[in-house]
Image 1 (cartoon, rainbow, N blue to C red):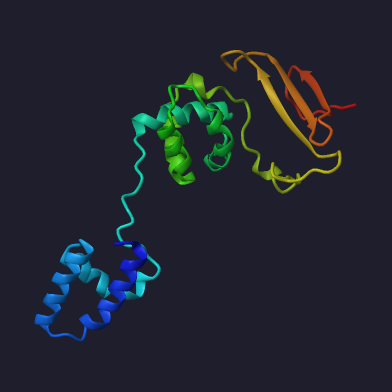
Image 2 (tube, rainbow, N blue to C red):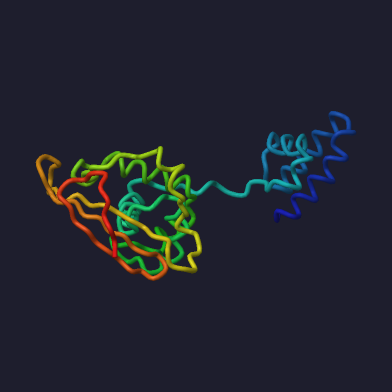
Length: 214
């Protein structure tokens, strides 16, 4: 019995079932169980929720399961290849990445599961990957969030459409090797998003000094 046929059948059955005698209800349930191949208890629940029948599929199948041991290596490889972007952006990038992904003995079934996976499920996998990373993989950092700067510097997201020069991205790198002790070179890179013009400067210590960019 198809989904649309089942909807019409149970809607019609409900109109008769609730006004019938107990003996008649038993006969109707037996007949419905034979026709629809559903258990009597299931049919009773459907009849008691006839208002939800039109908006909800009946027995539409089991939920897709995502085995961790199968998918985690592929998600980790793709996440690192995408430069550790957020799960939401990673999900949006899958249509472009998965057709070209051939590493780690991937097959069409794995690609199907990855494409079917929601951003929230993907986030749970990425969280496990981050938790199991070694300190060496996480890298060193010499910066900390400057929350007070958020209200002083106008910021646009990466999705903004830039149509003229003057909007820049900057990044600092500490050339410290495998530890942050001692004196080492810091570099700053400033890139104009529209023209892709890039300027680099290096300095020994990071201070609140004025660095002029040509």
